[in-house]
Length: 336
Ligand code: MEV
Image (cartoon, rainbow, N blue to C red; front, side):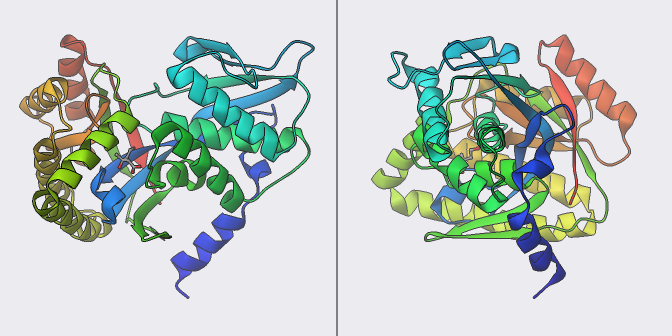
């Protein structure tokens, strides 16, 4: 067994308590997809990395009814067993009910959430919330489940929210790090990717909310209508992943940038890019970024930009250009 596989089997067994700090806050990762969103749903490989500490959750007893409070998302809602809400809040309530039932939590609790990433932005916020809440609920009732069980529960929550998730978001939210991910029929193949040094990217926010379930379903309908057109497109997206793995392992950002541009062209062909994403890519490359692509499900959400290595000045220039055009951005670092 390779060292990476051995390490990963240890990671699967890691306990929820590993992710809890001295103040009782329990964390999970958001994610960026470098290559392979959408095509991953159809069995092609993808490459994604975790953004540590993106969601932090703390649970305390309350005399009141159970509620979840997420100030960064302006969300404060009761967790009633029978939801009277619609849309996202309802789905959040259903996920929480699933977790409460799983860990036999019956007393009312207050769930406080600190979020470093916006929701519906392609950065895996809902999966990170599910992972952090699953860990926090388990620890609150005195259990300490493994990552494997937490990931399974988060997948169930993601299924409620997104209908047919590949499992990539919850897996990265749970394990963090940098992975090649592939779903072969029902089997999930996850390989840690070893890179020579941490990689820095910029994430720019389009300001348009992207709704994964809706976009994934639209792509599915298009694929069902014309499989002969979409299967080769998904296969070429998968082929980019194989090339990207080689470039990542060699730390070759020039090649990586070319591959990102090609992946973005495929995503545009799939119909999941939008005017704001195209504008961000135009502004960023004009300001000197090597390349970029949407990350996540698209139709808005976020853009991942590659500026090259050790290019702090260039990064600042790209960020200033985006800000002048009302697009927020921030650096992210991906490591093994
Ligand atoms: C969403 O972050 C990624 C998609 O590929 C959907 C999925 O993998 O479940 C669009």
